[in-house]
Length: 394
Image (cartoon, rainbow, N blue to C red; front, top):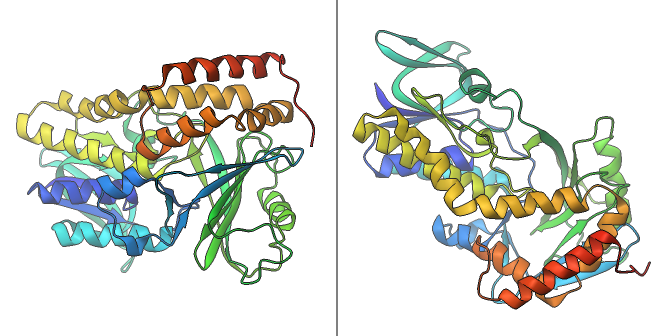
């Protein structure tokens, strides 16, 4: 009998398992093994600090973000007083899983199938990777951290089958050793807002030390993600770089309204929809989601009140709801057409926009110490959205 079984061993599930193990909760987690999520791999300083990530997991340190518009306008935003770290998800996720094991969590390798209940308790069924047999773990509580389009969410939480998402696709390539003929910079992240690459999201080129992640996302049916990524590579002079692997996966667009089933299951990470709108950033929010799910599970075990499972969503939203709301409004306002995307990149020229954006990104909180800058940005934003500002074509 386990106190908690965590379904999923990505950043969210591994974090939840580690936190519970360190709290002397008898916890197990089920990991598919070998699954690498397509991801740009960016992690802000707050994640590195809050989750004690060692420097050897950071494969690149980014000091500039470049925004590129549909007409080729480029805005370079320096990252002051720090850096954005880049991780390789293949190694980073396994590091988190091993750390959870070292803390005392029991690891099982296989694929989750369903949850059953009887007089003996709640049982998590999974198909063992090694034997192919269906095995069963008995537990008091379950944390569903099995990613976007979560089977746990669809089976256990009302509305779990209706989460909107974009499809993300990327190619991990060898970074060019000779930069001549490319626009690649090993210390710069490029974000491409161009309808030819993605009609409703963006493309990216993110350095990963010896490698790089090149990809895009979209919610629009019929878009050929591989063709779009090939065009992105060609535009940056990266066509001839060796492709190491190709990956695709859904990314949820907003948090679920309910994260628990009112009995014995609570969601975490992508399963709960906690990917930031506009940016698509997920690693930090997944790990926070794992932490608050662990907190809610521990509280429920201690109190015996199933309503304490609601703490997971309450704790997360208390700190991050405002950021998600603003990023969602920005995506709805600016991602709908190339004309809007052009104006968005133009707006990024503003120094106040740059400073406030990256202060908020690095610290994961809205910056409240510069009210005049907020007013100025609000007026400029309104002017761009209403077309009062003429955008010079490049």
